[in-house]
Structures are given as C-alpha cells and as structure tokens.
Image 1 (cartoon, rainbow, N blue to C red):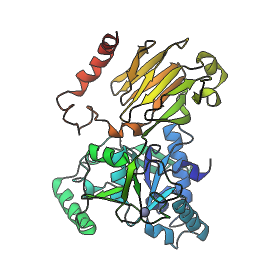
Image 2: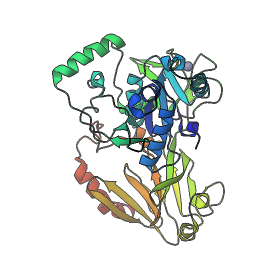
Image 3: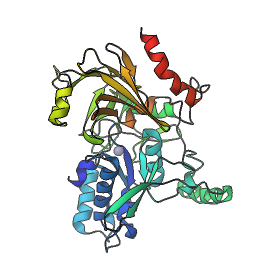
Image 4: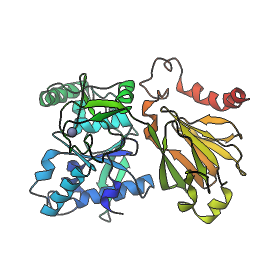
Length: 389
Ligand SMILES: [Zn+2]
C-alpha cells in the first residue's frame, strides 16, 4: 500500500498522530543514514499491523526544518514537499505542542519516544497515561514495530525545570482547551487568507481540519495567521468494518443523514459485500442496520434483519454482548461496537466522540460529574430495554 494512502489531515478519519521528523531522524529505527524516509514507511507498516488495519489513517506533522534537511535525499525532500502541498502532511515551526493539541482534541494516539516533560502541566492527561502513547522500536528481524508505553510521572522539580525551558521556547503560548472549545472550533468551517493553504485554503482540503488556538485566536497551523469563520460545517463520524478482528473498510456517517448498512441496501447505503467474504454476506440482511449521527454520537437501529444485531460493550473488565431488539434505537458510547454476526462488526472510530462528554474520562462536564464510571456502565444494559418499551 503506498505510503501516502495512510496519511490524512482529516480530523474525522485520523487515529494516530506522528511527528515525522522525529521518526525520520531516529537512527535506532534502522538504516544507515542520519535522516531516512524509509523509517516512516516502516512505522506505517508497524501501525497497520498493530491496529490490524491495513489502511490505518495517520495524522502526520513535522517541523519545517525537515523539508530542507540536507541529510535526506533530494527525492525524499520532494516527496515531503508534495505531501505538504497535497494536504497530507502538516508543516509548522515546532511540532511537539501541536502533536499534543491534536492528540487531546481528536483523541488520537501518539507515536513517540519523547516523555513530553515540558507539557505535563498544560496536558495533565500525559503523566501516567497507559493507553495514549506508542513507542516505535526496531525488531530483531530489522522491521519497525510499535508497542504501548506507560508515560512516566516525573518528580515535581523535574517538571518545573523542563517546563521553564519549554516556556522560554514557546513564550507561554501553550494552553489546554476544554472539550467544548474543541467541539465548537471543529463544528465551523475556517478559511485561511493564504489561498493555497493546504488545510484551510480555497482548493481541495480535508473535510474536517483542526485549527490551532492561542489564547482567544483561531489560527492556521501552517501560516500562523488568524482564520476566518465561514459558517457551520456538516459533522461526520467514521465507522470501520471489522471482519475476524481486521479492519476491512471504512465509511462516513454525516450528521442528519441516516445511512443504511447491509448486504445490498437501497438508495446509496453502504454495501458490505466488497469488504467481507461469502460466509459473512449470507448472514447479513439487505439492509441490516441504519446508522445515524446527531453531531454528538452515533446511534444504530435494526428494523427487521433476519439474524439480528448485538451490541458489544468493551470495557477494561471485559466485554458484554447485548441483543438489540428490532425497532429499538441504541446510542453508541465509547467502546461500543455493532455485531452483525460472529465475525463481522461495525466499529465507530474514536473520532466522532470529540464532542461528547465522557463520564469515564477524568475531564467530565457538569452533567456527568456526579456519576461514577462503574455504576453508570452497569446500569445501561438493564435500563435500556425498559426505557424503550
Ligand atoms: Zn494557512
């Protein structure tokens, strides 16, 4: 699969964020040269394996200095330049604070060996994090691999000292957004005064792009200038088609446009046949379920499928399978997937929950603040059928 097919700056599609300069300049990832684009290729293959998703989508960013790094070959520099012009690579003066902004706003997983000590105060979700960071490494066979890492919780003095250095570099511009601010910015269409801007210009661009925000300003990440708000934009959520644990395909659900999914749905629905094998196809109804998105979360409805639908609730203490009764609408929460049959599931990408208050998250909103995670989750399977009868 070509390298660039993994790259996207679309906020509703990306699942990982990678600092390209960091990877390309890491001798520990193999290769003889001080800077080598093959290390990025190796990392993307590793992520595809790790995610069990041959088409894994990665948000790639880099310091501007990489585009003129003389240790890369001329063709490698041209490739980076082309990715930048085509809106596949975000290029900015410094990448590390932007990396964390993207990870926080879009709930992306970060691939990095950095401890980000200077950002712990601005991003208190980093120290001790067990599920947001992956470390690339070189496997014995010479291929790049990735593995989850637990972020260190440094002694306070170390944070303070590193933070001071970081603040000097950044002149105090780091600021943590709250979730509603992320949602508000992502729900608008922004325009950059630079017409050829790859992310916010007049031409082709990602359907959902995340601007930078510094203090009260909304800025272009590439050009550092204020963006103009040109109105509301349709919100979209990504859903992956997972067969035997491997991602086979993906599609988008646009807010306010219910989408039929099945073997052969009528009128522009999602036909699963191209992604799944014959055994699976025969157990799936023509229209098996209808997915809808309200801008906050996805819902699923099974009107009359022959073999029925179940909801898998994945939680740290195990999975629960809950039958979805015909005609009942289920609001999917983080960790829920739609089981069409034993081998086939529809898995919402994490991205559509950007706008949702998650009571299992430390940064809860006012509505959710009183509820402990455990009891809330346990109550759902028992309460839902009662509500809907
Ligand atoms: Zn711009």
